[in-house]
Image (cartoon, rainbow, N blue to C red):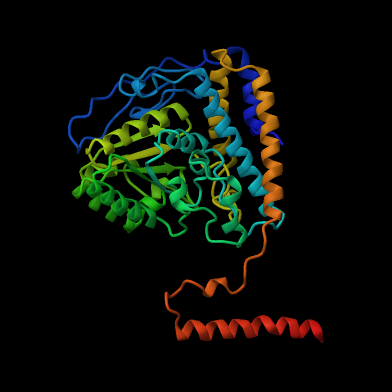
Length: 408
């Protein structure tokens, strides 16, 4: 199975000879330096990017300068770039395998991250080991960066566990299905970090749809008032299930931070370098006691909201095609090739590694044991409860009825 979309592959081949040199002259300008906590930050717009959008790597793979954010990726090496590309390729391969497994009936549901790899890998690699992550249910790339085995992400979607990993082992909280509630969890945790006097930071991930939830607004209020060391990372993938962003807000999402008294910044969510730099800046602010930041990663959900969704009912194919031209994997590959930082041998080895990962995921999912049917009744109350005992007995009788039917 290929690790790039067909459109991305075709575009890459046709542009291979001029990768890194095509595109128009940079049209953006350098924004102001940070002044007060109520000022929304503006970055440099790269080739074809709108003003205010931080972009370090254009869709053509061209590296553009940014006076404010270059220093946050100044030490990045060719090996680091290859590592970021590997992260994105393997995350996409795992995601594709999980989608296929759901279609084959091996998973009950799956939420794909297709198209959002740069936002997740860039921000995930900006974190320190002692930082703490509160994800939604789509942060498979961030989980990869935190060292969570990909197969552990699938137990919940197969219905055999409630998470599959120890949050404290990787400082990566369990997936949160309730929309937006993890922002409150992150804020409370960050307030505790501040009271403990630690210099670590907390990051909360959510989507553009969740940004309209009351829990998120409350998180903004508490984090601002208590100067909590938290980064709110909003992946604006343009669609809150079937509702476009313009039905969520009248202003760009990052500008919402101004009303709560802390800075917001919009970054090209398909630019892994831009996401890495901006997240590093926001995390440094948090660790330095400067309070929260809202990062809006402007990206696109190239697949369905989940495998139960049909995006063809509410959006056009030409919209997806336009965003496929901005594919985060294609973008970094063009840069690697144009800079002579990677050869065909590297890409071939990575392709083989991705296939090995796909096989491992398939085998692991199919080997997952069924859960104990009665485990759901455990750990509800510390000392037991009469109502739970009654429910357990009713469920036992229900299970026994199947055995009786088979014996007839």
